[in-house]
Amino acid sequence: MTMHPGPPPHDARRLHVRIGLATGLPFALLWGIWFALTGPVAATTAGPAVVAVAAVIAGTFFGTSMSLVLGRMQIRADRRLVGTDIRGRAGLASTTIPVGTPAAEVLRQGHTAAAALPRASLGTVDPEAGTISLKVGMSWRSWGERIVIGVAPRFDSATDVTITSRSAVPWTLVDHGVNARNVERLAVWARDL
Image 1: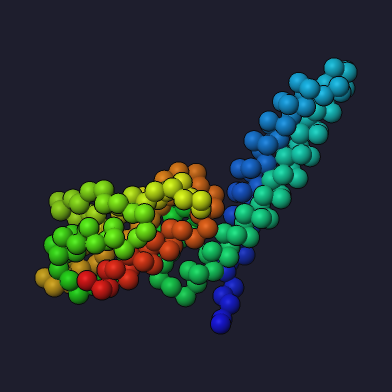
Image 2: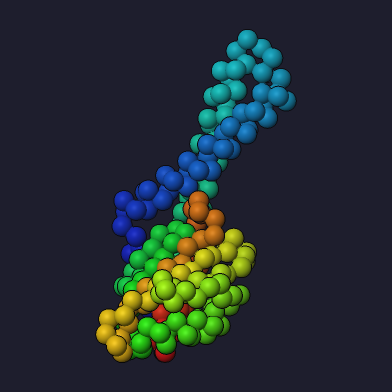
């Protein structure tokens, strides 16, 4: 088994910083408010400064811990994308594949696309826009996903199928590779048409 190096270092740093800030700042604010209301130091003259310093330390510690744990999980999930044609980041994955099926037939098979994914349901099929929309419900790994399959005819008998899976919650920091797996499964579905 070959281990892939994962995302480039600058992407990993950006992911760790984003997770650290997104978890550490709210924690520092909430912890500071709680400490100011319940702590005995808050009533002294140096109280606000002590509370602020303690909140920054607590937020930094919590944000760093969450960044290390959640960031590592996401980097492991992103390793699966190396060597594939799937582009993605936490909360979003997409790919475009050519298939030897007419665009109208791909759109008619929208119900089978929903069957290719566990817990997926068919949203809409829009022949005018050339899209199929799917919804995937909540699981312990995600709040759900919204998937759009775009169809663009190349010739009469060939079509480019663009599959995009995004988390239902737009500010998702870590998706555990759920969106990439959705795209992989639907790419297999499209190739088998």
